[in-house]
Image (tube, rainbow, N blue to C red):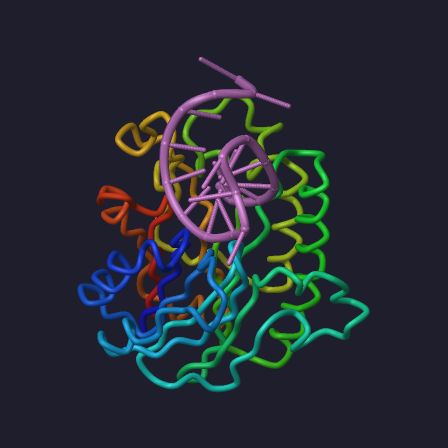
Length: 261
DNA sequence: ATGGCCTGTTACACAGGA
């Protein structure tokens, strides 16, 4: 089984890129982030035309996640509230960033972690608070499912080798020590990085800034991830980044990352 | 480089991204 994750930065703007990619890479499930569209306007029929159905959880203009599957998913759920009580979730489901479903016995959780703007900002505090609730959510998910694949745009580069040379990394959003520690704390519930099972060296990225011609210079960041529960991590046979779509006309600034198990 | 560029908004500059 193959599962892909891709922050598309507007599904309507990127529709041809995504459907063409699915035709060339017929994965079982594609997890989308930053769809930026309300559910009633999601382009369902374009995915049906290439053999997929869509489960969507969107909002106007910002955020939004979706599961694009060839076969029907079981037990699809939206938001933290599907697992946690209302007092714990608070206002965090106002932004549509969490969707989950089960396929072939694997519980897949698709996330769009808040960006955080800049270190020390209100949005940074929101990101840390969101990651704290995510840990509680995943603790529950792992207690109820043996095979779990948590994927998406985490907006954190875990290690220095996941970033091109950047002398301000300790003060930079996505690489500051506090948010890296917050991510490690989330993963301590029992999740491992599928990409690092197969590839040790740096220089492999999933996001390149639109500005300054960063893609041709490979000045990127590895911020999109597949994290696996122990049983699934043992089973995993491959994890790769497909950087090709970043070189197309009007690309997303992120590219797909695929895991196979 | 509080720079560079992209997307959506009842837009005509702004918020948000990362």
